[in-house]
Length: 162
View 1 (cartoon, rainbow, N blue to C red):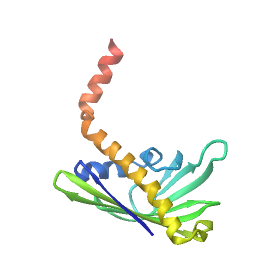
View 2: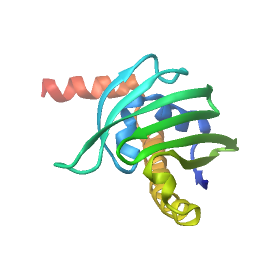
View 3: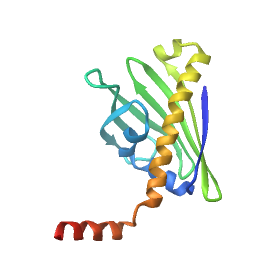
View 4: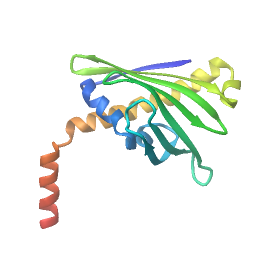
């Protein structure tokens, strides 16, 4: 099991907003290349992300199922990416003042990924999740800097008028 924690300098509500937008996953999940569909009402238990992973022309189709959710605090996921296998992923948020401690716990649970010795598997997953958390932070901080929807809409309308 690999566990990685990261301090994000925005309120947990903003980080949660990023996690609640299923179409964000290929932006911050390292290895995910393309979102094909979202099945169900994300983020509720049973919802499924249909995505691709890898690099073209070797991309593979995969799914990620939301097994359990504690709104604003925790997502428990099963990522399936055969022929590599399946992984159990838990993303937790802990608000601390104006920031958030984001924790990702992940391990292979089925398939060839389980054959990799646990210390090596944890090290590789940990490096990957270090980048996942950095990307998640960028998206959350970007929400802090983004104008509210009304201002954004007004700005878009003035750009098209001019």
